[in-house]
Structures are given as C-alpha cells and as structure tokens.
Length: 235
Ligand SMILES: [Zn+2]
Image (cartoon, rainbow, N blue to C red; front, side):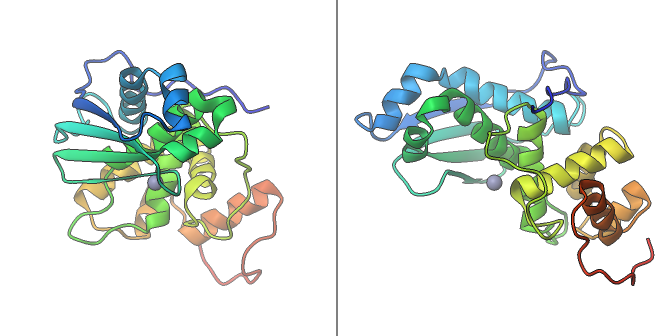
C-alpha cells in the first residue's frame, strides 16, 4: 500500500564525500549480531544511508564535508539507536536487542534506522546557538527514512498532536509540505538552519503560511480533528 519512493532530487551516483566508516560489534554472541552478519553488509548499509541523506538534503555543491569518520557501534542496549559526536567524528550506537527484535525484517530495519541516524550526522539544527525543536530534527530524520522507501510497517500517518511531535508524525507532515509547497522544501529548511537561528518564521518564508495554519491544513487534509478549534490565527 505504501507508495514507491520517488527518485531523490540529487544523483546517488554523484561524487559524494564518504567519510571513513568504522564498524564495531561489542558482543558477537548476541543473537542480534548473528542476524546482522547474516543479513546486512555493514559498509554498504551505512554508505547507502549516508548517500540517501546527501541526496535528499543536499547537492554535491552544498553537502557538508566536515565529517571525517562515522563509527557504527552495535551493542546490547535499551531503545533503538542514537547518534552523537563532534563536527568531525560521529558515532552511531545501534541496539543489538532491537536487531534481534526485528528478526523478520532485519535488513530493512537496519537500513531504515541507519538512514534516520545518518541524518543526525549531517543535518543542521540552527545557527547562533538557537536550535530548532528536537521534534523537527527527528522529523527531518524520519522524513529522509520515509523518502528513501524505508518506512517500517508500523508507521501510521496522522499520529501526533503537534507539528513538532517528532519522528514519523513530523516526518509525514514534512512530506505533505514537500508535496504541497514544492520539492526541495525540506532541504531548503535544513539549509536555512545552517546559517540562521531557529524561528517559526522560516516556515512562513518557505510556504507563505504560518506553522499553525499549515498544521491545521494538514490535519484537515487527513480528515482529522483540527487542534484548538478556534480561528485565531491569520495565515
Ligand atoms: Zn533521531
């Protein structure tokens, strides 16, 4: 039922800067480790995730070239995955338990989570120490995962009571914005966050409408209850 992903705006085969990629697996006896080695080519999986981020958020001219190394660590831990690091060195920690729990679709799940985490390695979140809401950063990460055709089966559009609820709720909202206001909008938003502090006004600049109005229109488009009910906002 899910629509096929559209080809990305930038060419996956362009001359993209691929950082040094490092793999660490902390527990080879873990059932998730066996699944991993049976189903996933780690270099290809991580490189494909990075190229997906490049293609959806950048061009070969705008792609950030500051990241020198991405270290991918699989280990037993709660949750799914997270990313941290400096401008030059990024580290993605990925739960072996989550791999084990996704046995039926291990390769797809690893690819999807890596696409999300790779966004965190290369996205901009706001200049001058004024970051965007965490939910927007997470939404952009899941939007790339969605566009890469790697949305997991449990994602349902229409969840989340706010535009910045994060993850797929914000990801689907961004996807609707991209469809409605023009391809490249999310990439442009990310690009704005490189040089400018976060402000809701960015949405107005990019679409002509205020975020509240956009969220209202999106909810209406889905046939869902509109938040607030009142009509206080302009556009
Ligand atoms: Zn995330």
